[in-house]
Image (cartoon, rainbow, N blue to C red; front, top):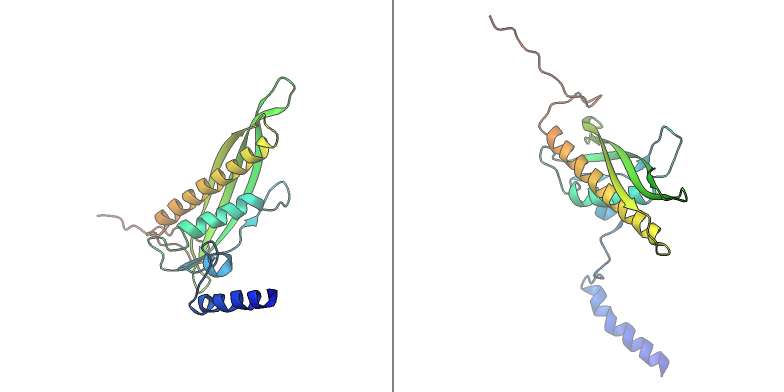
Length: 189
């Protein structure tokens, strides 16, 4: 009887697989979705003057936000490959009477470079943002506050990168350095 039920369920789901059925929350993850637009977003890489660190949760949130806001295109760039290096740290701002931190900032600096298909640099820039959070009184409340601050920081960095990319879209840059080329001016008689 159980075998008959399993076969019946399996056969009833077969037409769904044939019609291209995908789960509501599936099918839009991974490298294929991240690079489905004209601008592909590489994995976020960590850099730090204090030593190597992982881009971690903030890097993950930043890449997701860049895929959503930049991956489908930016005015001035028909296509490209975006590299982002992220440096982040926590700065303690306020202390409780027992000298425990009660308010902190997540600060982040992202250096972005947009490459063309031939490897030339189409644009480059650096953005800095910060997101504050309080330590909660509830158990594990500080973890939720830190996660929310990391998401906010990633969103702010992605918006700043997109804004800089829009501004860079109309400029002529040196394809080796990414620095804007200043046209030579001729003296007026």
